[in-house]
Image 1 (cartoon, helix red, strand yellow):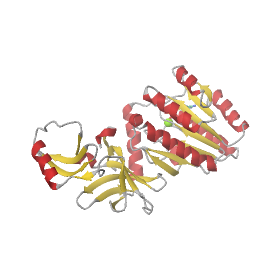
Image 2 (image 1 turned 90 degrees about the vertical axis):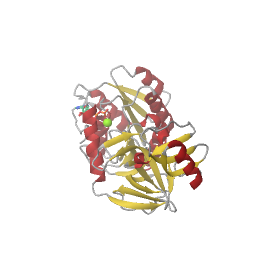
Image 3 (image 1 turned 180 degrees about the vertical axis):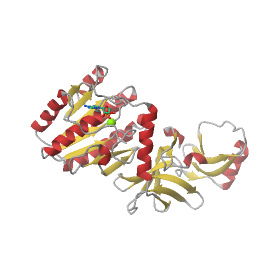
Image 4 (image 1 turned 90 degrees about the horizontal axis):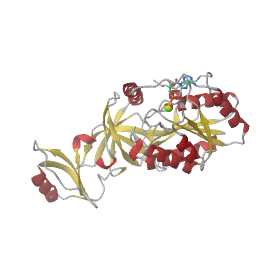
Length: 351
Ligand SMILES: Nc1ncnc2c1ncn2[C@@H]1O[C@H](COP(=O)(O)OP(=O)(O)O)[C@@H](O)[C@H]1O
Ligand SMILES: [Mg+2]
């Protein structure tokens, strides 16, 4: 279920990088950058195992939200291997930051903040912090890599490419020492379906042994959405919207704009203005949510199964045992089943 495995059969430039890491003063942070399937996770697995066998304490920050080794998906995780390992999926994360989607294009802020928080925690306990990243390196992905590098100021930035990332590699020099590595000849690429299947297995593994838990809005904040924010609409305001648009309005709030949760009653929905955000009730079912503590860290994730607006109750399927300390339920933007079927990726402004 993981692409990247520990191998010592690596190109010589990886061994040179290892020697540089062992030779410099600790602690040190190393960030990897490269396209999809360029060998970032294989490099990190190699470096981590070699460093551990040399007696160094290693922390891994896994920020490849779409193809993570450390569960759960859609978060950024910190793992501290306590011995040699074959793949990152063997590692248990000790801390996570919620991103809420496997496709981070509209979530650059979350990605940068999450990586920074995990790297800071890793630096407290490890000699070497290794940062794995997404293969999203073009367009906004390029900005994301730069912003991450700017924020964490890595000592070394390993850029794995075959020439296509030369401009990015040059631009990263302002934020850390750049080491350019060639893509391994042994590299194998995975198509969309294969990646999806890997993700399916990861979701399924994470949600096995889950149960439904109930949160009351009296105890937790709902964040990451305009739902539950602003003045609740009165019954007459809801009725008015129902009459105008042919909806059943389940809940609504008035802030800078109107947000309503509705179900269509008429077969042909009518258009509505831009300052009204209408969320279909069914878009909330199986929505990924983060269980967030007072430090802003994610204790784990869950799937939203039911919202009772009138009583202010949320039902969430989650494997997280200890819910004490969960202060926030943060809405993500992916809908997925506990079997790992990804139903929908939502835009940031959809909720
Ligand atoms: N040095 C290597 N030796 C053998 N296989 C490699 C090597 N580097 C990468 N690969 C293979 O290429 C594929 C993609 O590597 P991976 O590390 O998962 O890439 P990324 O993390 O950049 O997406 C994997 O199947 C991996 O086993
Ligand atoms: Mg990877």
